[in-house]
Length: 480
Image 1 (cartoon, rainbow, N blue to C red):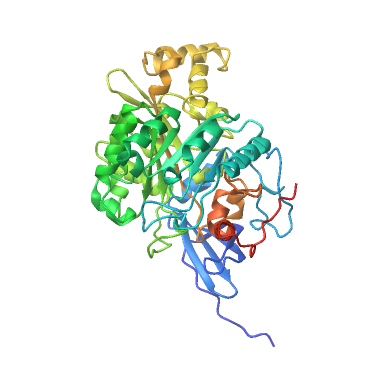
Image 2 (cartoon, rainbow, N blue to C red):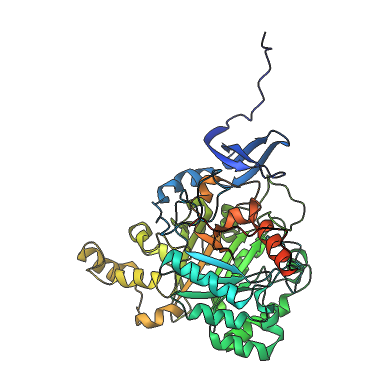
C-alpha cells in the first residue's frame, strides 16, 4: 500500500511560471528547476538527489520578467560549431549544434594572475597560467573562422595589463578582421606605470574599467583595499590619452547599490567615460557568504537609479537587449547636448520600432549600431513613412543634430548585465548566451556556463599542468 503523505507547503499565491534545467550549486549536477512567481518577484527552485532543495532569486520584478518575453527575438545561428551533442546542455559546450545564438563578444583570458586579491571575483584570479602570443593568435584566428566578421574581442584575466605580452596581443587582434578590441582592467597599472601606459595608449583599445563606486568603503568591501584614488588617477590618464572608457560596476546588496546613481552622474561628467555597465554580483568563483534569496538583480539596480534624487535615468528608460535572453541585459542611451542637457533616447523615440538595430548585438556599438539608428531617424528612406520622420524632427525634442561624425561623443550608454551563477543557472538562457570564452584547444564556451558548470576549473587545471610540463591532463581536440 502506497502511504498517504501531506503535501509540501507552498507560499500562498505562488505561480509556477515555467520548467527548465539548472545545476546543483554544490555538485554541479544538471537537475530540473522550477521558475516561480511570488510576491512580485521571480525565483528558481530545484532539487538535487544528493544535496536537497535550493532556491534563489532570479529577478526582482515578476511583471517585467513576464512582459519582457516580447523582446525575445530569434537568434542568429552560429556559423560554425566545434563540439557534438553527447550529454546535453550545458555539458557539450564548444559551441555545440544546440546553441541558439552566435557570439557577439569573445573574451580571451590571457592569464589567471592579478595584482589585486578581491573578495569578489567570478574569475577566482590567482596563480596559474600565462597564455603565449602564438596561443592568443590561434584563438583570434579561430574567432574569425567561427564568426567570419566578428564584432568584439575583449582581453581579460586575471588582470590582463600585467601580462608581459599584452601589447603584442592587442596588435594581433587589431590586425585581424575584428571590429573592436577591448581591454577589461582594474586600472591599477594604468594609474601607476606611466611609461607602460604611453605604449598601451598608442594602440587605442577600448577600455572596460572596473569602477565599483566613489567611496573607499565600497572598494574595501568588494576589492579588499581602498582604491578610489587609484581609479581616479587611471581615469585621468585615460582622458589625457583620449581613450574611450566604459565604467564597469559590480553591485552588491547592502554594499554599494546606493552608489549606482552617483556612478552614472560621475561618468556623465568625466571626459573619458562613454558609458556605464552595471553588473549585479554573480556568486561564482570567489565571493563572501551570501543569501541567494537577496541577491541583486537588474530591477534592483534600476530602482537604485530611480531613488537617486539627482538622477538622469529612470527605470523606464531601459530596454532589454534581444541578442541574449531579454532578462539578462538591458540598455539605454542618452544624447548629450551642447548646454549639458542629457536626453535619454527612449523618451524621444519609439525604441521598439528600431529594435532591429540592436538585435543580435551583445554590446551595441556606440560608433556603429546606434549611430546608424540615429541616422535612420533623419532619413525618410530608412524610417517607415516620411511624415513620421518629419514629425519627429519638428516636434519630438528640438534636438540640434550635429554632424554624424560628432555623435560618438554625444551618445552615452548605460547597460545592466546579470550573469548566471550556480543558484540561477538556466539552460534556456545559457543556450542563447552571446558572450564566449575562447579556449586554447579551439572551443568557445558560453560565458555563464564557463563560470558555473566547471569549464573554468578544467581550463585552469589544463593550462597550469601544461605550464609545469605535465601530461597528466589530456587536451581535448575540437570535434570539427
